[in-house]
Image 1 (cartoon, rainbow, N blue to C red):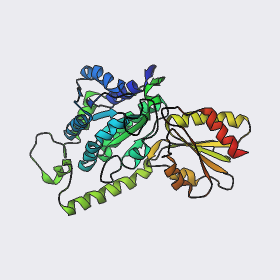
Image 2: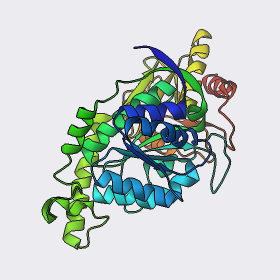
Image 3: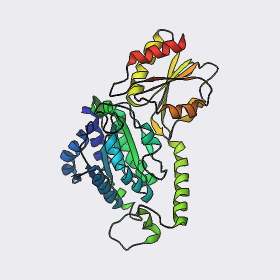
Image 4: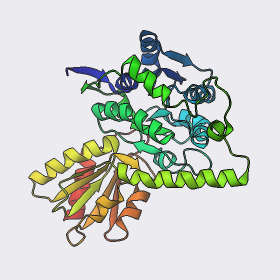
Length: 358
């Protein structure tokens, strides 16, 4: 397949279209504006529907409705916009509605800044809405990964009948790289996907409470609520088989950097530079932030590892909380942080490793 040169946001949108997404509703916010802008041009070409809602709340509600009818549906936003959509996302989780959304994250809290940041980690992995529901969360480190993850996210969402999040910082969303796009699903394939949802989706047939009660955004009987939560717990536990992680130069590492997204990409280049200096450093890069690759940290040889260095574009650190759980006090954990829209400096990572290693 040929490669094309695309901006991250536009590549995410094209990957969704190729995965069979035929409904998108969103609202403008930097730095993700190219996603709805691209959908606005592209959807009419594939007989899909694009809606710019009057707000983030309206947009996620429209996605809830379209996905309830069996369509592959998506929305996107950036940090404060995702916060506004959190209630609707929670409703989708409660109703077991498959949908995909992307957060092209920026600084915060509040309105924050329009520059890239990684300050939504806890929101994405621990509290995307009320009620303790969980989602699969993917963190691409390149435009190609953003394409591949978005395309696959719709399959995960349909498999689990659950929302799936693509968490891409503003660097990934706005940078341009060559990508290989996946095959376009045919209209026949899209029809089969929708047909497979007929047992629960709202498609105008006779109401069947046994199969379709789940599309309501809550369970009013205590017994139903407990049963729904017990089934959800089993679903979340099954995701351990879906963990994705990159372990780079960790076999003999004395310092292990851990990072995700653009910070991990910068950190990997630092590993290559430091290795040439004879410094034994490696990298653990979670590709799925949830479920988290705890086993990768268990595989480290803590007789060799002096320390783990958490690298993230967030002050205070957030990602480090899962790192602490993974390391289990088996070695010290240091941090290399930046915030306020500053992109992680490779020199800062290198200097932090040198201090630990010396």
